[in-house]
Length: 316
Length: 313
Image 1 (cartoon, chains in turn red, orange):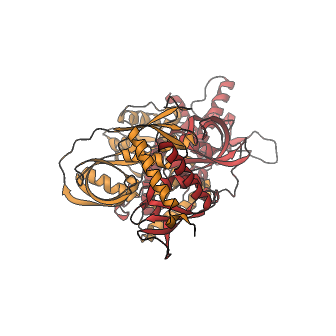
Image 2 (cartoon, chains in turn cyan, green):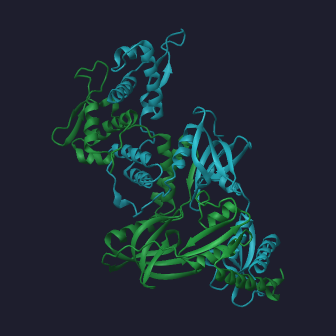
Image 3 (cartoon, rainbow over the protein chains, first blue to last red):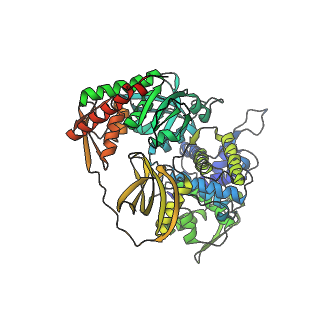
């Protein structure tokens, strides 16, 4: 067990310390821990390189002399090994530490811990008094969230089974681009390879565990992709007008703007509300029963009225 | 805490991080170091013993990392090569990016110094990994801090609470007991002094919050109580409707067709949910819920058909 750990650390030290590329034979000769047959050492070294790359360590491959076909060698450039966020002050460290703390006990607990260790290792005393009292927390323990994030960062295709609106299990193959949390739910965005289009999936509707397909680095996320702007574009806003009974339908009221109109009956207010999904909006209006009456658009008003008529027949 | 065996790779990563940490914290106590790295002291000792065997090729005392950890305190020498803090992995950058999102939404807009520091950090991170993760939090982090603070110091809270079920905003004095996650939402279990009973409050529905001076003796936890049930049949938008009634599709035996059972501590919540999903749901029982729904549908439809609301202007 610890022989392998030792070898990985020693390899890292040797590749970091060298100013020139080390050839494989030099590595086998000088770095402690490479033993056995030539093929065995070869396999060991290949696996070690993959392992170090999984830790985010960049190993460069090059030759001594570009003019001649030489045996290639390896090194780790110190600038690619060390902390990359540049100069940070104590306020930055405090903010980043708090950001990492939000994930403790949640889906990415181990990444949170390793990030915290690195931030603290910088050795700048943080002044917690400088920050307001905040307790940020991510509550998702969904293991698929961690899997999705590492698939995105490693550019690995995902396949999974997704629960459709009619409860069918659909299999999906996706080049994952981004994750986002909205209204308390996590969504996964990416290029659906069967449907050849950008799609989003609510993580808690994925059945079972995400599985990876093929090797890392099999696709690129388009340079122009930004999850923030994608979220804004996906569905256009529509405007509804409603009467709300005074003092009622508080949640609708809180995101509406009042329209002053002398024809508004006493005890009611006329308001305008933006919405994106008509079905959802109809459900929300019906939640408030006789305290909300929708006027516009006609399609929304008709769908609410049809539901009510069906209800009168069904329950009457 | 159960001790989980680290893989050789996890252990190697930890060794690479231990060196810079000890270098900037020379003479750190073993116990402190173990808790910082989230491992037991015996695992830490095994790490340090391995680290002792590492160094530059040659592996004579001149090249090996030199550690001192005899008396419960750790110092390191001869480890210049590994002294630099390791770069953050992309996964670590993602969680920092998202974590900063949580902060930015909870900081007083007047703290410009902090807000611009956060924006700068987020910009730096996005240039490395792209704009690939974001969160719009539904709970204010400073509210959560106040709740946690009140629980540990056994103080009461004064809240202004927006109840979606009762469709009202009320001011209450509560004794907080425990923060929990219920159906994917953060909730606070508390004793409400206005109603003289235990209540569950959704954190995202707390409009205002402050610690009140009153201290409370320890209160026993209430039992989970989901007393009311409703039998429903769903004809379309099955997934969304099950989600609204908080029925897990895979758990529910009659998932594909037939009837489902919804549970709640509030009868009103069940009725409102059934109203919301009129287009997709039929309530089969209890009979009094059907009567109540008939009344509500009739009354609401009357409004639409009345002269005042009937005409679209």
